[in-house]
Image (cartoon, rainbow, N blue to C red; front, side, top):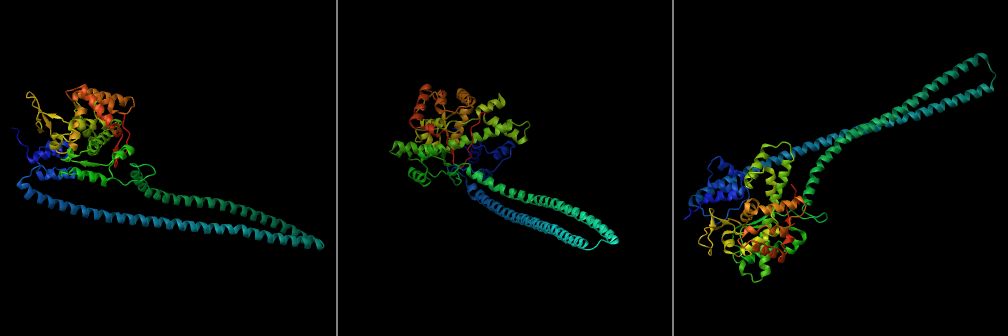
Length: 498
């Protein structure tokens, strides 16, 4: 008999399935982690630990109370740090507001001084006009008096001298007026330029303040259409609670989860079930049973595909750089191990790191699990009927004595989806599948599930007959409609041709 895995080993296996880096690093350094530490790290990564993992007495009576105390201490630290950061933010906001008010005061003072200077300069032309009118009237009266009286030589010399003196004075005054006008224009320009220089920091500050608001608005609008606004949808992970089908259906009604809406809007809500309802086979309506199965499995498939797309974007970003950081090199090494790339390097990784069309994944899941009602699906969350010779599995009731395989068991449904996609992307039996997919990429064509289904003859012993059944399931249930579907809370991205 195979040795039964301990609770700690089960937690480590769960960490390997979800690729928890922190636990893997500890194991590589040969540091032993307690079950409590493993649980904390898994919970920190938002991984739900199934309740069918059996715990021991020491864990229930010692480890859990200690973890609760440590969690409370961590919560207290988080609250205190949040309060401290809030106070610091208030201080910085106060500083920014005070600096803005001071700069505003200086700009207003400079503007008022400029206006006062302009007013003083505007008085000079008026004074010049008054002086000019006074002297012109005086000269007119003088010449009238000279004309009415007899001419005297001595007086006439004085008059001529006075006339030339007045002309000189008037010339000086006229040049002064024109000088003052030029000074007024140049001063006005300088004042306007100074005002603009003072206003520029204010505009820059306003722009700097508004930038984050614009970014937030953009992030809210990305998952939605241009006109309609939707609130951000949070992920809902339903634990292993032995839910009944009636409860699942009522939940779908509460959240307005309808497949026709998904087909039209091309978005699905992130609702993740950890297992199928045990009484799913009791639904009398075949249509309702199939729809319930699709509603449970579709978000899991879409979530894994979007995770692969994120990796493809990151790979493209890294390969486009001339130099890479140590973190990026570590990420590449990890992806080489995940996709089992030994030869070919980056080019082979590009071929393997790609999505599985939702139509194929749904069709294979329906075929291998009997639409979620098979013993393997209900007892071991085995949706895709993957075989194992070494791992923990379920013994098939009807199999040849010459074969010693088992059906691979998984703790939750999403782990089964992840293992299935890794299988198609790495196993040598599906080289044609990956080559066909890459060919569609190179031709800038959509990854079509019906075309790729023809290359999966090695998945089952029936070969070509199996691919015909997959195509029939895809067409009859309109599974092609779900290929462009994205999660409602995700960023829409175009698939990359790497």
